Length: 544
Image (cartoon, one colour):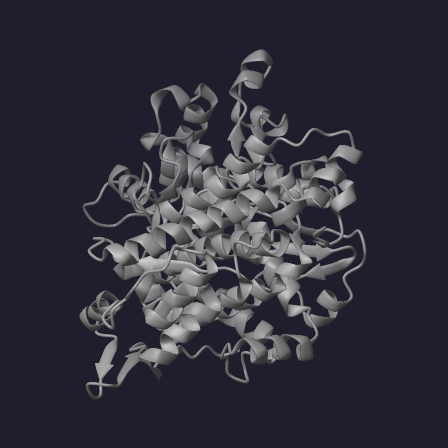
């Protein structure tokens, strides 16, 4: 049975699904890829605690806190919900039927208070300034455009735009006849912040996977990296430096905008109407409430967690456009979910059909093909690889020990729900949404690489400003992600998934990858027999 980190499994009825018992609490199909990153960053920027140990905002726990984590203790965090900022930014763009009278009334109050605080010289009217401000923040709408305004969220370019989940309980509000104002609604909890519908704990699991990886004995980490052939530099393998750098560069990545922008967001959310902020944050904190208890991840996922940690750090260290960095960090979160599902499933399902000695260090293979599907052999291998991964995930969820544990609790396993919401169908949904699997609908699913995904692989495999040979690059892509490119690794994929013999792959089976790298400007040809993959971006320097 997977052992949970932190050890809180017996405390919750949430863990009565076989897929949650296998993968952690929880990766869930209703949580979008952008919301995985938003929730991860929400935990990072919030005030946190482990039992009586306080963890600062904008930091991961230090090594002492990680290694001394008390039994049965949750990671708890205190998120901001930013209702005023969401109302001001999203109400006018939301569906008419979701605009409740109390919301409209409070929006007008906010607008009038902002107008009253403006001191304008020149020809611009206060109405024009309000219009520009509203459109400025609405322009950073990221996800949830078809939801009620409070369930939407911002593109996380700034820590002041990262907000917790808020759900408007419209039915309960209508039944409460004495509640007619905005602050009545807030006080009486008609805004629900703890349903976990969209920020559904996936980001918490990713945060905990990093914590779990950083608390592993250094010699065990180094032994696994060395035996696997995975390359990191000495600073990345120094756990104290790794935590310090991750805190430093991740913080910089969500504060690297003009300070006035963040001040403006705080002004609208907290200064104009401090009462709402107190009701959803400060008041509850003073009463010892308001902290969210995070979920858990399986302890054995520390290997993929360590890889994810380095990938996040490298993306944050790379000097690239802030919007592109956020999109790449979202891709890192999506890949980590897929990698966890495949790696953890390979640990709990074994069959004579699949020979693990041909798999990646994490126990699986994703054979990729070109989007156009011009090479029939390559398409066939990729399809078989996708089918095999789905089959392994489906069977791992049905692990006998996991099902027996539920039966001992007299709980009937909901296997269909596990498959659709947490298991192999969820894997397919994430893979398709990130562009890693085609077609979007129908049969014949296969893994592919597009320009964005290939760029992501280069920026996480090759450090900023450095080069490596093409052969070394595809080695590390296989070792770190399980992605098979080229004749050597496609042959492994064929043997791993027990595909009928293919007579010849051809020496140009990866020519499409080389063409994409060349078109992206990341391929440097030194000779006919030697090409280098280059990360053309500089490494950022951030003062500690």
